[in-house]
Length: 515
Image 1 (spheres, rainbow, N blue to C red):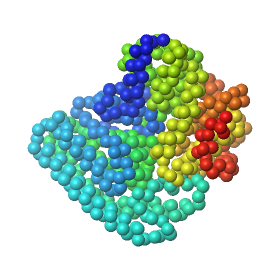
Image 2 (cartoon, helix red, strand yellow):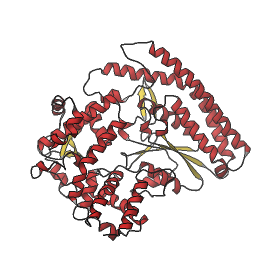
Image 3 (cartoon, rainbow, N blue to C red):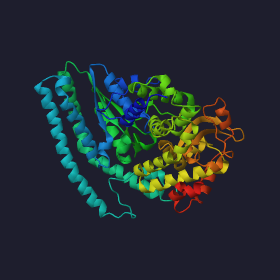
Image 4 (tube, one colour):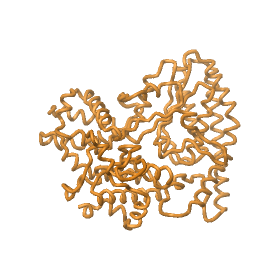
């Protein structure tokens, strides 16, 4: 095994880079396919992947790889979390032009005309924000006095409620609430819309003055942090701002927690995939486990190089199926895999041992609990309850069937909004993992998607040893075995929901129940 000092340095390097920081160490994105090339191109893109797959890293690496005549401006939407509309859009635009002002001399030279244009734009945005604050208060007062069917039509309405209400029956009210929110948004956008042609003309003038910078890429990271009802409006304005001027956008987000396009009253809002932007999918799924295994190994090797460890020394840290099990426990997501590695390394190195399958099994329980906490922090109250119920019933189904794998008919996912929302949101939180699509079943008609539950749901349960069938997703015959997996359909889901205990979180996490 590598020396203790090197191992300490390796853990330090990983710890400092688990979450990519704007001005942190220059860690390179492990490029697969054309992701890096696309992120550098003068084209609009949306980058989709679960948290921890490298969306932010790809944005930062692409900024360093741009041609000298192309510049980038990075904005993190988490900075605008819980901000009301349209202020959130105005603040994003203000941040964009303030960043441009800070880089004015280096990118465009010391020209008074350029500086005057930027200052006038920032001043206009400041005035618009003050107007929006007053208008927002007027609308809130009107809404508070309008008790329509007991629903408060607040600007902060969350569109997630439209799809995530599994156990209630108030779809009509929710639809009215969302529609009213969109109408309010349109009213508040009027001034910004009237100003847009003038703003774009000033941007064109700005680039005409420049002799060195031909284009600017706007990087909007973690769009999903914005309120769901605001996202399409923000994307719509950014898309229209960039059209026919030398501006291009790269939006990084969770696919199933984002609304980049919506159609309300026949009015398209936002940007449409393939028409207005091209997708860059960089998710690490189990559809090709060996590919995910290789990608995670290259990432760990890169960190090892920064700690002066050779590839042989890194390989010497594992035994048997240790690394494959680590990747499986992390759902293939690099951040989760590295976090687990950092947690298990001190334990095995203290006994001069190597990381094996059992070491990862011991950690799986605490890793699962962390995912539940992350879900609770990110999701809203009613959505949170339903997601935790969803985790409980899926785990109960798999424990009942004594397998880590289950399949869901693709037709059900296409036609049933509430169950599709459940599965896709649990994918986002790495509670379940996609293993195959368009799969035929040996005893059922139709095509299916195959999912594996996170090993944290069962790997720590010693009482299941010898009684639980775990499909090895890295094996050549994994897809064939999936074709015999139990089918989880809408009827079974509804039956299981009726059996959920009152304190579902306690039942899900209680070690007494688990054992």
